[in-house]
Image 1 (tube, rainbow, N blue to C red):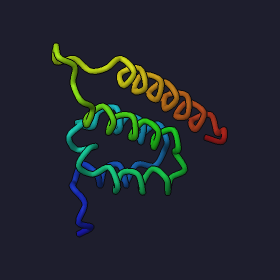
Image 2: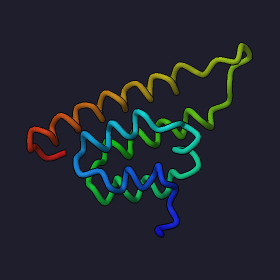
Image 3: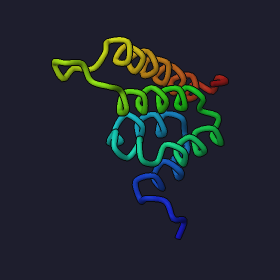
Image 4: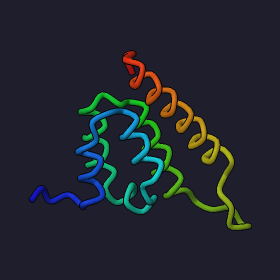
Length: 100
């Protein structure tokens, strides 16, 4: 028993950057927020720095102060979209055998 949530163990067991990216895109924000330090260690250990950037952006989104209308600041939302694009590119590069 590792002490990790079963969903986080799936990330730890992922063998490719594409699998890690797929996990990040499917993972609930609440899990990413709660387990961000464990997830960060896994991603750093795998060398998926774009995944760390995406994680940071999602944690910022989850902890951002909402606007008066209940929405999120566009600066935060844009940060998540850019980090997601970077992660997709890193996953593709990893699948092609390039350095991520």
